[in-house]
Amino acid sequence: MSNRILVLYGSYRSDRMGIRLANFVINRLRDRGEDVEFIDAKAIGLPMLDRMYKEYPKGSAPEALEKLAGQIRGADGFVFVTGEYNWGMQPGLKNLTDHFLEEWFWRPAAIVSYSAGRLSGARAATAWHGTLSEMGMVVVSSTIGVGPIAQTLSEAGEPIGDGGKALERSFPRFADDLTWWIEAAKAQRARKAPPY
Image (cartoon, rainbow, N blue to C red; front, side, top):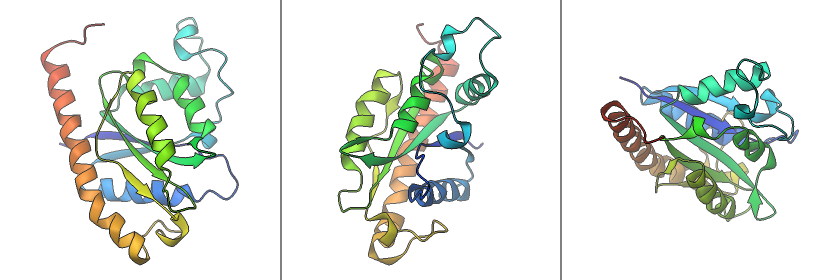
C-alpha cells in the first residue's frame, strides 16, 4: 500500500531553481510507488499570517486554507524542499507552514535543502529541523542537501554531473528512512489515539 506524501516547496522567486529539486523528489518517490502531492506555496498564495486556520470559526476559513488543512490532515508524511536565504529559511514556505499546527501532528517530516553555493542550504535545513519538531512532527535523520543546484539537476529535475550522481546515491536511504517513520507513525496512530 502506498503512503500519502506531501512535498512542500516555498520559493516565490521568478527564477525558481529549487523547483528542479522538488520535481526530482516527487518523481523518485512516485517511482517507489508512493502517492505524492505537490504543495506549492507560491501557487496557493496565502497572505502573510494574520490568523491561523484553527482561529477561524468552523466553516469560515478561506477556501485555500480549508483545502490545505484537509491535504495536511490526510497525509502520512511530508517532505520540505527549502532553499537558503541569507542563512535562513524561505519566508514563503515558513508562512504556509505557520498557518497550521495540530494538522501536522504525529507524522514524520523530511528536509531537502538546496542553494546556489556549495553549502547546499545546510543552514536552512538546520533551522527547519527545530521548527518542524516544535510543530509536532518527527524529523527524520536523513536529509539531502543539493548545491550548487544548477550543476546538480537539469531544468527537468534530472541529475547531472558529479553532484547529480551523489544525489542519486543518497536518495534511496533518505526515502527508506522517511518510509520507515511513516509506517511506524501509521501503526502507532492505528494502535493508540494521540494524547491530545
